[in-house]
Length: 435
Ligand SMILES: [Zn+2]
Image (cartoon, rainbow, N blue to C red; front, side, top):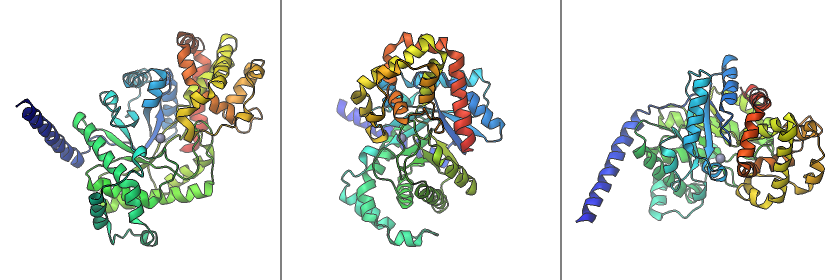
């Protein structure tokens, strides 16, 4: 008897979720603004300084909204939770008198960890990269091929005629159906609406503009309405440093991506724009002019997700502060070098560190504040700047987390130089170049 009752409740829950789903699809109450930018930081101390930079770009005429993002991976390594991210965002918004929209992003979530994020997030980055290339059910594939045969997309007719739908189905269908599962799970727990982002960026193979089109087509068929999509773009997006790849090829692909999303919106009658989301978007200075020009040309929206590099500004602030701050910065580098393999392991596909180019810790111990800071600051015109050093420090946040009170007290003691670094980095090197 018990079993039957449970089944009944499960069915009722699914039914409720479907009703909610239909209601929300027709009335997506939460609508992401056209220009949005990822903020947030490893240790949750820099929300106000980051928001101040967002306020400045708004004052300059660009209505950019902040999205606090922190991935499950970061939470696990630092020992934080999503409730603290929401708190940081709420506090910064209150302290800075921000009247605009703001979001808290459950970044790179899967069915395994979504529960920890549901109550505190209104933006969900549904990551299905692991399902790309997984075997697809025969019936699912046959059904998809039947629905998409003889399809035409204005402006893309040649590309469509050369597009291999079989390859696409084998590659992406299972992942797309996983999006549906996770999306509907969130929907059944989040009756006030939410922003859905689909991310497929942490894979070796870039998705083509037509891949994006058919991903959206299948999502639409499944009643899933993403507001942003984060593809794997051509080239490499290493954490904390500049883009590596052919910027002309990137520009070509990015333009096609914008055009195909606009065509998809029109053809599939999506209620709102679907924006591109650029992951690991901080510090990709060589492609910022491309993004800026194309977003302007097509009057498109954009979401830039950052790679959590704000914590590097904290280390720069500590080094600049001298004394104990500089000592802590050097200790982070020293421990980071010793534990390189362990710290790099979660980031192998998004790191480009040549260990030969890392200065020995012994030498770093003798450096002045200015030397340490100049090696770390992302200024490619500075002779001391070392991208390998910068990436190593970037992945060493676990070392700082383990220092615990010592590190957190230093963040308080050196508050002024740190906030100055955080603010200047965001407004001068990022927002002003992007918008
Ligand atoms: Zn990503």
